[in-house]
Length: 158
Image 1 (cartoon, rainbow, N blue to C red):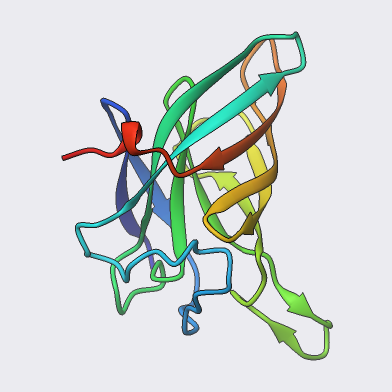
Image 2 (tube, rainbow, N blue to C red):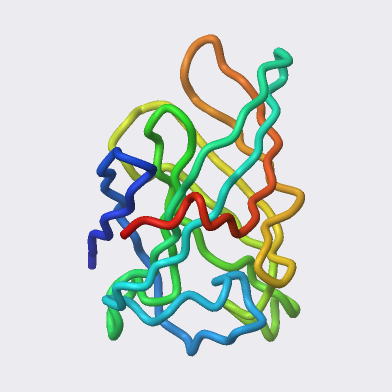
């Protein structure tokens, strides 16, 4: 089943298609303590990035969970420079025999925007911050990015 989640990257409306089964969310998982879907208080973070060609910068992005009671409930959308929004979920922990879905603080993201180009990201949640982020874009001239995100009141939207 397909569900849609609208995420905004500072002035740009973006659509993310999210899939998955909804185990219960925890405050110590990769969801940054996001309120359950549909809550107006989505989280905003300032993300600083560096690209493989030396370009660097910052941008504000909104993290928002999918609607409560749907397959997208324990997924979130994350925006990247250039208007790309990726669908993200917690990386499974445990073993193949006994996997624990949505229990880890590491996350994986993939493109769900209809583009033929492959895009992916990963990172870790440490408290209110995202650390160790990596993003691989799928558009010429093809770049690899590193990023980290922190709370920043200047990024809060009314």
